[in-house]
Structures are given as structure tokens and as C-alpha cells.
Amino acid sequence: MTPPSTLASTPAAMAPAAPGAVPAGGTSGRTSGRTTAQWQQADAAHFLHPFTDFQGLARKGARIITRADNIYLWDSEGQRILDAMSGLWCVNVGYGQQALVQAATRQMQELPFYNAFFQTATMPAIELAELLAEVAPPGFEHVFFSGSGSEGNDTIVRMVRRYWDVLGQPQRQVIISRHNAYHGSTMAGASLGGMAGMHAQGGLPIPGITHIQQPCWWTQGRPLGLEPEAFGLQAAQWLEQRILELGPENVAAFIGEPIQGAGGVIIPPASYWPEIQRICQRYGILLVSDEVICGFGRTGNWFGCETFGFQPDLMTFAKGVTSGYVPLGGVMVGERVARVLIEQGGEFAHGYTYSGHPVACAVGLANVRLIQQLGLVAHVHDDVGPYLAQRYAEVQHHPLVGQAQTCGLMGALVLVQDKARGTAFPEEYEVGMVCRKHCFANGLVMRAVGDRMIIAPPLVITRAQIDEMIELIHRCLDLTLEEVRRNGWGGG
Ligand SMILES: Cc1ncc(COP(=O)(O)O)c(C=O)c1O
Image (cartoon, rainbow, N blue to C red; front, side, top):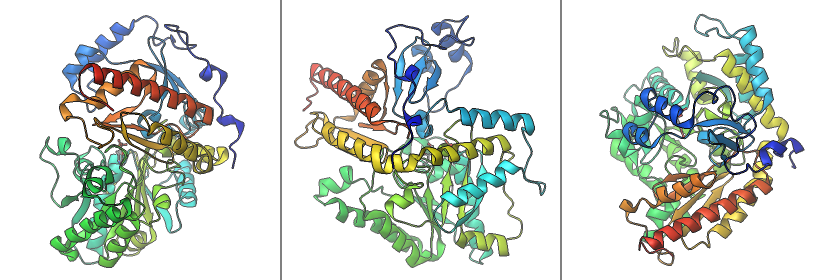
């Protein structure tokens, strides 16, 4: 299905900014009156950024982003930047969509807030729950709203344990997750996640959460000489082994992102998820798909589990539900869990002030309708997803790239020291950060996770814009290669 022409970027968005030029609207009231350096000083003096070395950033100065349109950002120096990360994997419909702005404005004027605790509801929350049930795979009729993906995963922990309590199996407490997973930054979210650096701070994980290896063929299957599909089956077996070690009667759930996003866009072999599903079914364990990144069209279907052919019992969502315009998250609750909680559970002693926030839900409603109207899921599935895959197959030939892989509009490039052998660079070279530096300097946001360079551009991206992005990626890889060779680090 060809998406309507509204996908094409506006002339303003396409026009290349002259070097050093101030973009239209770039020096709005907000930037006027202070220079970039003054903004950076105020930032360093007061604003503690997430996942940041505070002192290091204060020395360098933050980049100040002032405006955005379609798939482009502008900074306070007037540089135009192609945002190949959709903000933080969330701006699925692109920047500047007036339908979302109007939905928020209307709702703020009519009813900016009311809670859903006191046996009350607001219309946007009801309508969004209804629409989410429509776009979700069959069997998902209920939604529990939170304010973010992390909170959504806290809800998952509470909900799966409550489910087993109600069924008279309170000992089923353990949730199995994977190393290098990212499930958020609250105590439960960070514990479910498998990030060693996060666990090292604050005594995590909390009890009752354990991790198995991730299904990364490049680092684990390839060195063993396994074909991807054989490796996918083996990686799923790690789940069965852990279940048997723990005793199936103690295991509540398995949680995973269909594609591990923050871990470096780890796309599992096709054999992996169906085997995980089979194992969960065999032991009666709940299967949770964290769709915070993969949901809302990112992989070419509404949800990532559809792309990988499995049917979870619960799905966490956030980000793409509002395209990041306002914070919103939650859990889609499948029939198996919903029936028990509704019919036998009594009061579920859990909730957030902002569960079902009317403004967030109004924006979510406008956003999901816009995804439908623009045909964005089909656009990714049939057009730009396959086109990105085709262009990435060319990037694979670059001397620095060991593996280039995409799924829908997620992509990863593995930077290697020796292309023929696929040897990794020594960690201390931080070659991913070198590449990222060149990306920033050349007007491209691409994220580095170790030596994996990752992208997840807005779903409204066109083929012409993919060409522009690929050209920038090539340029940044070339500059990185030059620097690598200058430093005597090998390369190619
Ligand atoms: C898969 C996944 N789950 C959960 C989260 C946490 O979401 P939030 O940052 O909205 O709390 C993220 C954030 O990147 C994520 O990628």
C-alpha cells in the first residue's frame, strides 16, 4: 500500500540549512536572549541528565535542540540533523504532526486531568483502550495504563505475581529475562533488564528475577560456527535449562523484547521466538513481550510479536503509542490473565496517578489514528522497510562493517577491526563513540552501543530520505575508517 503524500517531508524540512544559518523558527523566543554557551552553562548548573556522566557533560556542554520537523532536528547553532533514532525510538509519526498538537490542546482545555481511581473514567482513556484492543493481536481486549515503559514493566511484575497468587500458586515468583535486555530504569524495570552497568549501581536486581543469555548470533552463534537458525533454537534452550534449574513450579513469566533495542538492535534468528513460545507453553509460564520499542509499526506490523510469530500473554507498550509527544505507557493484558484478574482477583492494589491521563490518552488516540490514516504499518512492511534492508546490504560492503542487519525500520551495523575474520576492536578504542562523533558533526543522529551503530528512524521516512541517510552513514563510516587508520588501529 502506498502511503499518502502527507508522508513526504515539507519543503522546509527538505531544504538543506546553509552552514551556520539560523533555521526558520530556530531562534524563537526560547533561544533569543541567550547564546548556546549560556544555555549550556545553565544546563550544567541545574539539570542532571539521565544516563550521563554529569561532570563530563558539564565540561563539554550539552547540544541544545531547539526545534524539529518531519525527520529533522535543529540545534541552537542552526545545524540541521537527520534524526535516525526517532528521538529515543519513539517519534514514529515524525515531528510536527498538528493532529497530535490539536488533540492535546483540545483535551487540556476541556479536561486537563482526572484520575481513574475513584470508580471514574475519562473518555479519551476509554476510547484509547478500545482502539488499542482493535490494533492489538486477537485476544488482547484490556489495557492497564502507566506513564512510561518502566512503569509498565513494574506493572508487569505486580500483575504476573498477582495472577499466580489468585490461582493459588504464590510460589511462582521468578521472572526470567535476558542479559543485555533493557526494560526501563525503575527498580523493577532495571532489574528485569540485563544491563550489568545498571545492576552494579543500587543493589540490583531485586529478588526473584534471573537472566539468561541473549540470542545474539554475531557474538555467540557465529564463533561456534552455528548457522543462525540452529543458534536460535539453542538460545531458546537456555530458557528451558533455567526453568528446569529453578523448578517450573517457581517460575511466573519470561519477558523479552522481540528485538533487543537498547542492547544494540539484536535481531534474533526466526527460529528463536516460536521455540520460546513452545517452552513457555510446555511449562505453563506466562510470556511477556516488551513492545515499548517494537510496537506501533516499528517492525512492519503493529507489534513485534506479530513479526516474529509468537503470541504473548502480556505486552508492555510506551513510546510509539503517542510518538513520544507526551508520556504514556501501559500493559496490554491478554485473555488468559485478564479473565483471572477480573473474575477472581478482587481489587488489584496497584496504579499510578497518571494511569489513563486524559491528555496523554487523547494524544495517543490521535497518534494511533494517524498511523492508521497514513498507512504507516504497511509503509514500513511493504515499502521503506524492504528498501532500508536493500540499502543496508550495500553498507555491508564497507571495510569497517562486519554485519549489517535490519528488521522493519530498525538497523544495526557491527564495526569490526578485521573484516575478513570479523574481529572486534579492543573495547578501549571505543570505536563506536568515534563513529558517533562523526555522525553528530555531519548532521546525523545514529546511536552507538559498544561497536554496534544503530538506527530506528521515524516511520514517515521516505525512500529519498533513506538515500540521504545512507549517504550520511557512508560518509561517517569513511571518516571513522580514516581516523581508525590514522591511529594505527587496523580497519578493513
Ligand atoms: C524495551 C524497552 N522497555 C522499556 C523501556 C523503558 O521505557 P521508559 O523509558 O519510557 O520508562 C524502554 C526504553 O527505552 C525500552 O526500550
